[in-house]
Image (cartoon, rainbow, N blue to C red; front, side):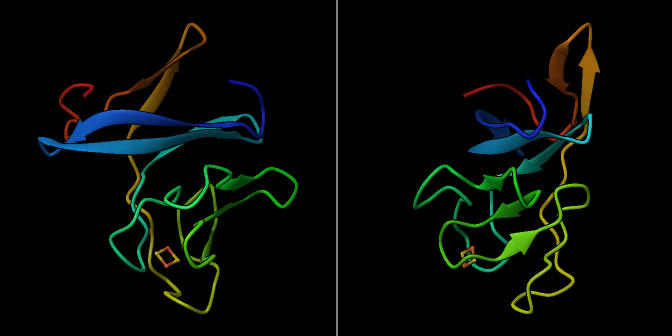
Length: 107
Ligand code: FES
């Protein structure tokens, strides 16, 4: 995955169908559960352009809360201090693998 790009990945989280946002920012790969802290909505529920590569922020497509891509923390006044749920991820031989134990299998 190239710098400043993201993917939405279907998976099972705690045995429920879900999805993750995986992104690369400043060389590092990060993964978060694709669920906003404001309401129980996917960040990409309105459109899938949830990673603003120019600003370097994640942005929920529903009401526009902005998140730090390195911590998942809300940078907006709305939901200040709340965080997206991080998922453990590793890059092995240029392959990105979600290694979080709560993720049991792809959908
Ligand atoms: S549901 Fe994400 S900002 Fe409101």
